[in-house]
Structures are given as structure tokens and as C-alpha cells.
Length: 159
View 1 (cartoon, rainbow, N blue to C red):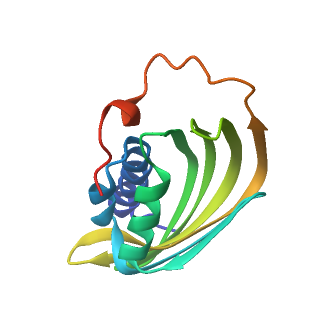
View 2: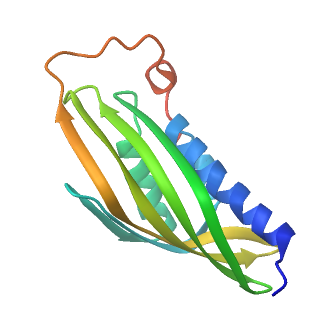
């Protein structure tokens, strides 16, 4: 079996940029990483995000990743298969923390992403992104956490 290492690395960079951009509220940067008809289905223990279309998804991201939230998403152990010169699929292991400061809720957990990628005009983009939680923990904080640095709190998220 031969691996398309350059394509695999380019796909990894797309996913890494995706997580960094959402954590920083750089929603317009996410636009360039998605196909117009992107489909997402994120299943957690306390929510389900299911939607189609880049603009619909970007609007949802802009609402969720705002100055009252803190998030950290890290992806690990990518398993990328390049199927054709313009299609690929991948599995990623996610660990994440999401703090909602207004509601004093912390959600943390892990999930397995299963994505599909499409090369459009020579650039890899996310076409389908789904995940199922491996575990999720949601805790209500009794008091506001002592946050000493908060990127989204000091910068306006770009939508």
C-alpha cells in the first residue's frame, strides 16, 4: 500500500487549522476550510449539532464561540485514507474542554471524528464532519472560575 503523504499532511493541516480557528473565534478562517455544502453531525451526551451548508454552520459556530466562552480542542492520532486524487476520509481522536462563563458550565470529554474531505481547485476542504462522544462530563461551577487569560473575552470573534 502506498501512502499519499503530501495529501495526508495537507489534510491534517486543514483539521488543525479548523480547531485553532474555532477556539480563537476566527470564524471567517473556518470558511476556507469547508465545502459550500458541508454536512456536520456532532453527537454529545447533552446535545446534537446536525446541519448542512457552510453558512448555516458558520453562523452556529459564531454563536457558540463568543466572548463568554472558552474552548480548547485538540485532535490526535489521525488516520487519513486518500481514496482518489480528490477524495479522502479520516478518523481523529478529539479531546476538548468548553467553558460557558455566563452559565458557569464546563463541558469536557473526548470523541471520535469521522470526516470526509474533497479537494476543490487543488485545496483540501472538509465536506463531512461527524463525531460521537466517547465520554462527556458536564459540571456546573458554583462560582465563576479565576480566569487569568481569555482570548475570546478580549477580542471580538470574527463572523
